[in-house]
Length: 356
Image 1 (cartoon, rainbow, N blue to C red):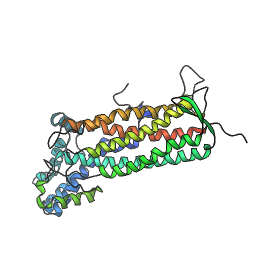
Image 2 (image 1 turned 60 degrees about the vertical axis):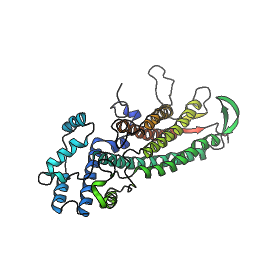
Image 3 (image 1 turned 120 degrees about the horizontal axis):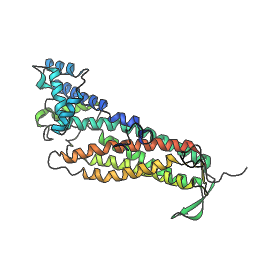
Image 4 (image 1 turned 90 degrees about the vertical axis):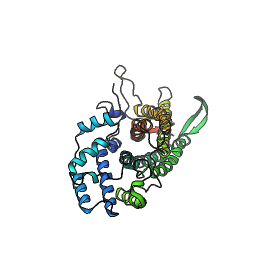
C-alpha cells in the first residue's frame, strides 16, 4: 500500500490526476513563491519603497532561481514551513547590499496563501472544463436513451416504471448547479494574500491598498479587501463544493453499479475490469471509483471545518491541517470527473432498448 494513492506510481493509474497534481507540484509551488516575490518587488518599487537598484537586484536574483530542496526540507523541519529557508537562499542569491530588500514588508503566510490561490485558480479551470464535459456527455447519453423503459426503484425495491431519461435527469441537474457553485467559489479563493506579519499591512503604510492592487494585477488574482490569514471560510466553501461534485458523481456511480448487476442488466458497459479468478466478470471499475472518491471527499470536509479554528492572528496547527487536506480533495474531484467521462464513454445503452 502507499501513503498517498493519488501520487503513488502504481495506484495513481486509478486514483491520480496528473493535471491537478501538477498545479500543486513542488516545481509549480516554487514558481508561485517566486512569482509572489517578483510581484511584491515591482509593486514596492512603483510606490518608492525600494530603489531601482534594489528592484533590479531582486528581480535578477529571482530569475532562474532554483533553491536547494534539501536545505529547504531541513528548514521546514525547524521552522514549520518552507518560506524562511526559501527566502534565506533567495537573499543569498541577491547578495549585498540589497538582500534585505527581498521579501520586504511581507510574511511567510502571504507567500504561501498566494501560492495556494494560484494553484486553486488553475485547478478550478481544470475542474470547470471537465465538469462541463461530463454534463455534455450525460446529455448525449440521455438523448440516445431517453425513452427506454427502466424500473424505478425506491429503497432498492422495484417501484413503478420510469424511463432512462428520468433517471439520467437526476444525474444532470445537480451537476449543473455545482458548475455555478464552482464558478462562484473559484472567484472567492483566487485572491491575493497580503497582510504582513500580523495581517494589518502596516509596513506598507498609506500605500498598502495600492501595492496590493499592483500585485494582484501582476498575478492575475483578485485584490483582497483585507488580509484573510485567519479567515478561511472561502477555503472551506471551496472544499464543500468539491465534496458536492464528488457526491453527485458518486450517486451516478452507485446507480450504474446497481444497474450493471448480473440478473438486472439495466445498462450495458463496454470493457470493464477483469477478475484474477473469475473470467466471466466485467467489474464496473469507473462506477465503483466514483463512489470511493465521493466517500473520501465527504470525510475530508469535516477536517476542513476543523481548519477554520485559527487562534488569534495566525495559526500553526489549523493552517497546517489545510495543507494536508485541500490538495487531496482537489485531486480526488479531478480524478472523479475523469472517471465519469470514461464511464459515460463506456455506456452503450441504459434501460431496455426499444424494438424497431
